[in-house]
Amino acid sequence: MEDKLVTIVVLPYSKAQILKMRLEEQDIECDLEDINLMEDAATSVKVKILEKDIRHAVPILEEFLGKKPELQKKHKEKDDHILVPVDFSPVSYKTCKLAFNIASHQQVKLVFIHCYVNPIVHSVPYADVYVYDSTLLERMDNAEKNANDNFKKFIRKLSTEIGKEKWKMVKSEFIIKPGYADEDILAYAHENNSRLIVMGTGGDSGTIVGSVTADVIYNAKVPVLVIPEESPEKEIQEFKRILYATNFDEKDFAVIDKLVGLLKPFDAKVYCVHMGKEDSSDWDKARLEGMKEVLKSRYTEKDFDCRLIVGKDFLETFDTFIEKENIDIISLTTHKRNMISRLFNPSVARKMVFHSRTPLLIFHA
Image (cartoon, rainbow, N blue to C red):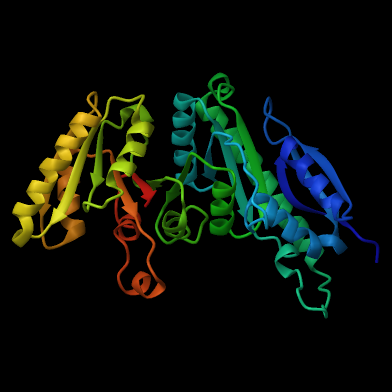
């Protein structure tokens, strides 16, 4: 049977050229095929290899995109960008519009990433014996074609709603690849030093920006902005009241510094809120006053309001405060925990991501 060329990833032209060189260094034949995902945008390229080389090419691709660590990690200059996972759902349009709005204000690039299940790549054998499935090629062709067609339609509609002239003001790149969404989003963000990940959630729906959202915010080393499906559509300059939930962690001031950096162009008030218990309220009030003094002296031009709220039910009490103060964004810090703790005592951020109708800005401490 004659070997067929298969697409392993769609990348911007410059990145595709680098990957091609890496593959050919390992004696893997590689062809590049231009595709027109978006008019007046940087060229996107299909990276194609022979079917027989998939087994050896996948580890090289994963290392290139950051999924597998390099043995000798080289310093990589920061290519300032915002990463936006896309799954073509209604909330994905809302998420992409807000990400575009943030990128235009901060004058950084947008990188759109879409992951789809490719039967060939996910059937790559790692044993010596392999029974070939004759239907894989047909299914692979369908998966690749559907992913590219849906991406074109999505970007065309998104750019039309934003406005053609406005769209051209922000540089964008498109990545389409077979893989697992949560792993690939995290790998790309960490390898390429993403400034921010912007993604949506509609609950535990099984889509890229649904069920994997909690896993991304839990493991991301970069800030993650989560847009709930039910939240109203706004531009970033309309977010005027930000809630930062503090537990008096030693990393609070470092996280607030990042938060202020993201909000720098906008006139936003920050509420530092601690959820306390009645028997410790005096001590908590004293710590909040100390925190307020430090913040006022460090950020003289920012408006901070430190509050203590007390209640038996965390989510209900927070909801009441959010509604009363018209909070636009909730900012939280999530910490690493062991697996047993994750199963039996979910983090605040994980609870909030499936509960709140207010956008969440998550930092990893």
